[in-house]
Figure 1: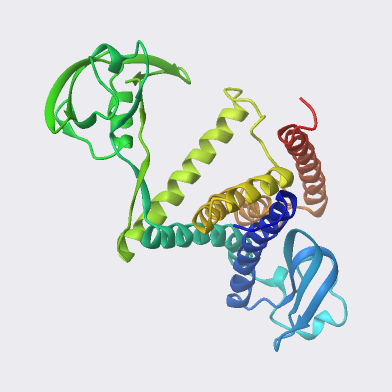
Figure 2: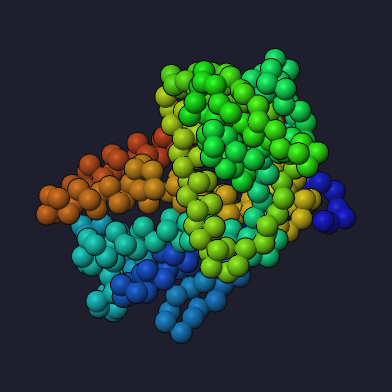
Length: 361
């Protein structure tokens, strides 16, 4: 896509990807704060000294900082209620964050992750309406040796029409039906050379996570892109965002439960590397990559870890139940523990990133 060394392309793509994700996340906080009549003092993309700043008509300072590894929105009076506001800050009555009802504060905090999910839905919908939705057709791109499909006589380029009388339209339909019938014999109707033929297939079984699932033993062919109408694309965007969310949660649960290693856990270096690689595939692939990362960013921020949005929401939930805020000392300990946990995860992710970059094995 760009005629420049891979390093500079990766850096540029990384800045675009991260900039879009951070901007929309913080924009969610900003818009919710304005809606709940909380003054926003600073809207910053990046950390550290500012490259450029400007002040809008309501007094918010918009800042572009030199370290593009995140961003923040500083709300008026966001400090704990025990911390007195500076004299200058007291000149904006009725727009102090910690004086708002707990529901309004929770809404402002939750709006960041919500914006990430909405961004993913919109990006997926735009892709489906323009480039089309990738659909893997129920065609055998490869038949594995000694598999259930091979034993039944299935061949490459056979198109599966139905399984046990149930019509199939995509390769996902095949996977869904087959996985639910381990060690069973099913009639599979295929189309080969414009002729239909029914095969009797004894489905193999495989254990995944303590559960037996069926396996046919074929790989799908190349994807076909089907352009959707605007309403269909919108529904598809919501559905795709939900699927990515469910798959991400499933993968994280496998790591936590020990069913899967933490080697796939990546950080900024890995994202930068992938950004450059995806950018070479074209704008559509880059947009899809941003959408997937937006879902991940929204999920991560909802984790109930102090310092993250989910940790603040946990404190607000406790406040709503107790009728009063969590004691300041308990919040302080929670934030310290959250920072330690995030630091540990960052170190682990960076270690994995360096391994992916080939600096060590």
